[in-house]
Image (cartoon, rainbow, N blue to C red):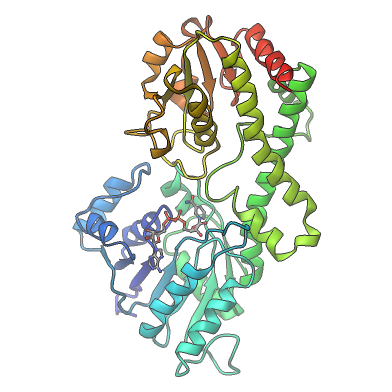
Length: 434
Ligand SMILES: NC(=O)c1ccc[n+]([C@@H]2O[C@H](COP(=O)([O-])OP(=O)(O)OC[C@H]3O[C@@H](n4cnc5c(N)ncnc54)[C@H](O)[C@@H]3O)[C@@H](O)[C@H]2O)c1
């Protein structure tokens, strides 16, 4: 460690989590090397620019790069602390793929030295940190490795998951509480000392396996509760009830807090992480597995209902509002809105437009579909049916006067004042469609 007592840091993986993390650590005065396998990402960051959209990230990265605190490379270099934030996707059978984590471990192992701290931040199935530890032990038999030696280990290894919300990442990176799981209590203390440099939220130490499970549990909790809301929305359609009204009323109970239904659950966290638990304990997870099925099934319900509405109005022009997986962001990965809109595009082609203010152009699957990319004003002027798929603020603020005469299918409940008859018509049509 350098004499000014600030550790040098290497952040492995410079995506939605790694780049903001690297920038925030650099802002705290640590010299940070960002490591990525993409030369394009590295070049962009070294120019002081960013390759992802995140509130205030551009200014922060530009500042820390120009002050020489953050640089990027595809070549690893020695550091005092390594933070790994590479992807952890699942395969077609929903089995977690930790190959990126192990690849990152393989990359850093040769440059590790006594005193270093290695922290895994990628969302990971329980036991991944130990697997990475075992791999480092194999590659570096010269180092005393925590959990595998009776003596004081040379390095520390910990797991510390990220729980930030896209769109608020910089704020939440510093203000959220963190769970810090060490392979040993000593490892947890070393990692804690590092996070204290830039985290204002409370940092709670535990062991690596508990911290891994905590992250998965948080997202499974969200998924199960959203599934309850989504199931209610389908039941309400069948019964001709307004689900939003029912939820609003039920939430007046002091101990009830039903979440909001939507067109499904997307993104790369809530729709993915519950599978890591199911994969580890398939027999013991009927609820978590069912919730995944309910949330995926909601997309098909929305498609059927939207199709019935559009088919009942053969001369109407249709606009799908939003493609992102949640409000006010430019992330379209695993987005139910995008899935629904692309299915409708196949069927209705040039009768349909998409409004997505966070996209410069429509994703590839819309190519040759005849669907046009328009803004919200044009949709209000030219379209008769509006299908709300994302609760972007720019949609939420459209006044009733500009949409009162539209047929609206509002999957996000952003327009509670929309004339009810239109919503009921859509529900009736969906029922008729079976
Ligand atoms: N994005 C979120 O909101 C969020 C929130 C909480 C947790 N997470 C978790 O954080 C982890 C990272 O997610 P993300 O959204 O930042 O992913 P991302 O895809 O945006 O970024 C990952 C980056 O890692 C790089 N990379 C891949 N393999 C590498 C390797 N071997 N060495 C160096 N770089 C490598 C990729 O090129 C990419 O730039 C995942 O486990 C994810 O589940 C994400």
